Amino acid sequence: MQVPILKQRDYLIASIQAALTDADLLQLRDALVSQVGTYRSRGVIVDVTALDVMDSFAVRTLRDLAHMIRLRGAETVIVGIQPEVSFAMVQLGLTLEGVSTALDLEEGLAYLDKKLRITAPPSVKKRG
Amino acid sequence: MAEANPHPVPLQKVGGPESTAVLLRELVAHLRQSRTQLREEWARRITEAQLLTAMSKEEIFAEATAVYDNYVDVLETGAVEALQDYARNLSERIIPRGVETHEVIGIVLLLRDVLARSLFAKYRQDFDKLSRVLDAYEPAANRIGSTVAVSFVQERERIIREQQEAIRELSTPVLPVRERLLILPIIGMVDPLRARQLTEQLLRGIRTNRARVVVMDITGVPAMDATVANHLVQTVEASRLLGATVIVTGLSPELAQTLVNIGVDLSKMNTVGDLQGGIEEAERQLGYRVVQMIEEPPVQA
Image 1 (cartoon, chains in turn orange, purple):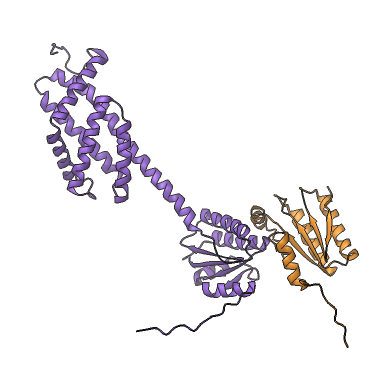
Image 2 (cartoon, rainbow over the protein chains, first blue to last red):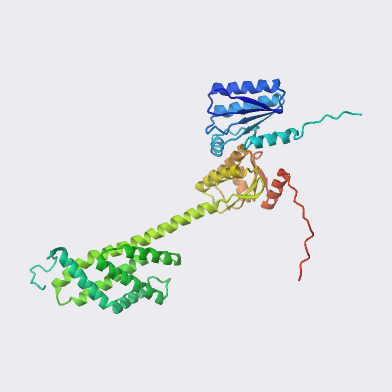
């Protein structure tokens, strides 16, 4: 199943709706990493609310995705990790180090807005 | 009734169920008649055996009267429900005062003995009849005894279950103090079971309150073993995955040592000395600034 990627202002939002195969995950990663450049996005949000299981491959792919996107000049936030999933991940040692996380999509947007300081549309002041 | 019986003991039931009923009726009449005397005797034996020490003499006598009447009623009707209710009710009243199981069983056995003694005295002349009366009396008395004891134990277990439930709920309160800010005061020993509940409640609390910062205060935790400490660190990391920062406050020197010994990655742990400092830090992270509006009024003598 392909994950739809929505463009919203300066951000890309990928909302995962069902369990993904490893191939789907890699496809999502590649699509996001490439579209960040296409749309000149500054932030990426991956919503995993619908996942009630995250295996090591999924976590590693998400981490790689975040690192790749940072190298492409944008920020990534993973949102919507379920409480039970989060604890299971930590117990397996899958802690997504170096990747930002937020409670849900709304919090993720707020986080990116704050981090990238674009709460208001950036206005370019002309001199003189 | 006084047929000559060639074998004194044990007796075969001579006349089937009717005769048992007749005997019980006679027995009940006797017990009603000597109610005052037997009940006093019983209360005296209770005091003598130093049972129910948590209760006053008057209380013992009042309860003894009620139990005695219930007891005789059960002998008469064979229905234990009323006695069961009474025993539950009595247990509910006396358990909080520290009455123990052996005391309750002890007093019921005493009553059984007192009544049996009075039967011995009454039918002393007629051994054959005495045996038959006891045949009728003993199973009924045993049933009453076990009913009371079981009711007491059941009531006690119910209370214990309720208390466990209450402790479990009370032991890990997750309290919102400001928009997006939770505090989680942990007091007392933390065992692995409690640690798991704590994690569950915290993660759920973060979700329902949409918390961004959590202050976990462990001033009240005297010590922790490595397993629990590790669990706590995992809770901190799991919270981060939900998008909340955890600030740990009130680490005792011993706990600090435990954490260092198990090799905690300190870059993942945000610690502040005390709860006040933790809340201040949390407010700073959330962008709050607390301003005192008026000067404190001078303290009047």
